Amino acid sequence: MRSEEGGLAGCVVTGAAGFVGSHLVERLLSLGCLVVGVDNFFSGHRENMDAFAEHPAFRFYERSISEKGLLRELKGWHPGLTVCFHLAAIVSVPYSVDHPEETLHMNHKCTHQLLAEAEELGFDGFVFAGSAAEYGEDERLPLFEEYATSQTHHLSPYGRAKYLASRQVGKSPIGAALRFFNIYGPRQDPSSQYSGVISRFADMALVGKPLTIFGDGLQSRDFIYVADVVEAYIRAGGLQNSGSGRVPARGVYNIATGTGTTILELARVIQDLSCALTGHASSLSFQPQRQGDIRHSVAAPHAFQKAVGWTPAVSLRKGLTLTLRWAFDNTLGSVCRHEEFNLF
Ligand code: UD2
Image (cartoon, rainbow, N blue to C red; front, side, top):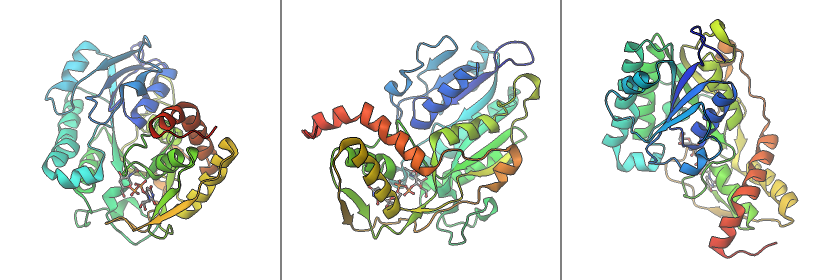
């Protein structure tokens, strides 16, 4: 992909070592972009960058988004930078409850600071990672973008900070805020009890442990595969067309499939797929409902589809198959060693 000056289109990715960030970097490099990755490893992992750390079009800086002037410095070193994908954030909802000030600072104030710098520096795209948490517990389903307002009762400082940042980005002449629903796929970290349900179920199913269902399992989520998320980023950055046809998106958009799946349905599919891979069936274990758990979360995904022609391409079954295969090939060995499982 060539910019108007004839050089490679340049993109900054904050949170480059995270689950989604690392997939986005890979895709941008495959399009021929120059990619400058930033991460302070607060929640990202160095090994997520193994696949491209040595790529000639990739530069990495171990820096924090809280550093004033960061984007100016990067632009000074890499004048071809024109798009900023801002993914770095405090991503844990429980952490945000324990650290509200820090969360507001990192997820809202630092986004504001980066956006202001991007505008001053003449960037033509600033794409922000928003969240379904911006809707709080809204019972009107599916959730349309305009449902999140300053009156919304956010259930966590994480949700509030993401809402404030998205609102600001959505009003910027260069901004697009993408509200992601439940993202899953290879490289998602299953190690905490607050990790995404799919990464946890995959991890447990492959070692034959029971899948823990919090509550009755009839709560539902709108699951979106990471490759579809990456494609949404590419469209939002206007990078799907080469050369001068680039038109980055503007505004606030849901990124989701529009289909809800209950946790029980999800568990059953994962049981099946994992059994096909390992030959062992795993059981279900029902645990008390999580405090503050939202009952249903399903998005109206059409605004972004209309704006940029994006539609999710990976079905849940296909995405789960890819995720389990990856977990089987990449993480199972270490899980087995740590937990002294010997199934095979
Ligand atoms: C997601 C986001 C969170 C925030 C929130 C906004 C992830 C990982 N988290 O939280 O960052 O944006 O949405 O609403 O995307 N569950 C089980 N068993 C498990 C783990 C989870 O039953 O082992 C249930 C859990 O109680 C919940 C559902 O699965 O009902 C989804 O849980 P989650 O942690 O994957 O995501 P969610 O929607 O709570």
